[in-house]
Image (tube, rainbow, N blue to C red; front, side, top):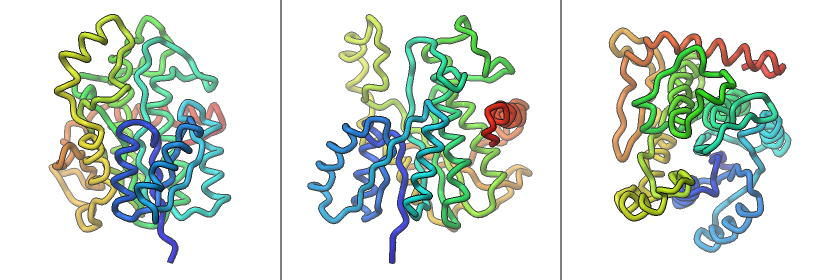
Length: 290
């Protein structure tokens, strides 16, 4: 019987690669969704040596391009891959303000628009009881959203501030996405602060931070633990529940080896509905309705 595939975006990165290894160790076939195909091919060769009986596929995916996302999903469909798990792991912390070809600021595109668009396109192709896991960040805790979130305003951009807003946007829209599906589940993973290239700020203080800060960061393997736990969450733990008068899919936030229910205040955030509707409007403009 053909096994269902697990898609991991950003699979060549530190956490993504660690997640792939963990999944392969569980004898699960993996689709490495990567922007850098050459790098992915080299890593796959090494993975096959480590896991000789594994099934590893590579498909190109650039989350900074809506067309690339659509092409990726078309390839999944055309190659008739059976998929029941999607780990939206890829992310980026941009130093500078840039606008992509679709008219979105790059940090927002890769960390929010891309994962949400990919999820929406993949849902019709995934098997019943599918699992989508979206990666958020500790920065969401000091982030808030307003109606200027999508504004292409260089003065409002900041390297960590915009990243935090994008991750909080993904956090909120994941709750709404979960409410809009009936044959699958959505969970969240927070890897914590991980020793990877992603935390390099490309500024003068990086060498100092490498000495004083990096030794206390989690390893990529540790950062991948909550993501894999979220993907493998037993079915009976994801049933509909009523929590503080919220009758919705039980979205869980995984961190370390633990997980917890999302607090009501996030469901009640007035920006949650605005964000969902505004995101949909912007896709309609591009003839890519969410």
